[in-house]
Image (cartoon, rainbow, N blue to C red; front, side):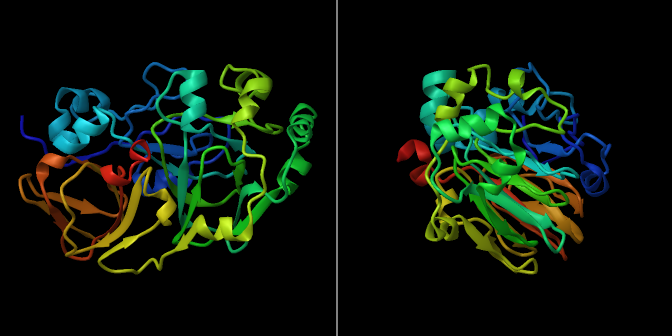
Length: 342
């Protein structure tokens, strides 16, 4: 069966926080009020769910199943031999009308030991739109004690938890890497693309004002005594923070990396414009502006315009965009730099 690039239908569903209208406008999808995320090219289900969150291809198959049926075609021989049928990537659009609560994600060692999973959840954000005073919270500003954090969680002290984080100003084009274990939050009104390891693992530190019961659903069914052991308690220094950030002008040409080098073991993201040739490999693409076509070595050409999202299989070979298209592409790590190789 010949593989070609596939445009993705909308994949929003209800969450515990508000948002989603910017996603709906960009992707011609359902929008809000409680659909602030869209998964693009997802082979990962929502935590505890059988199928919710999986990308459904236009032919009715789950992308997960299509990849399993032809992993070399979708992922390439080298990727398949090293990673198996896992795409090593989950891509989302996030559009919160409500501040995201302070939370964290476990690393690979914790996930393997306590959840039987090969991946944790290191993630990264690339800012699409942001109000003038936009901020994200990343890591503790001062080193914390476990007893201290546990008291803030137990008493649902939202004010103190927010105050404990480093607040970073962000603008369109900024990239922020968030290693697993680091507590973080995102202010309302920021529209971003998120790359992450292929899991849905979140540990909540506060939930006041959100449509969730954190006491019941905030600890991955592990209980907070164990779940909070996944947390990085040490403060982030200014040099640590600088290493997690990068900025890219939105009108960059050619192929420009959108994330700091610390993201390389987990995933890659690049801004591309028309004429830049991209090497064969699995990718998820979001078209930011313009209209034109994607032309590849072995696949059929496909018409594209702003808001289109698509999955690109390895089998189409090298490819490029035509006319005035500009897009962001998300890809798995290079094998030699992957976290599993370190």
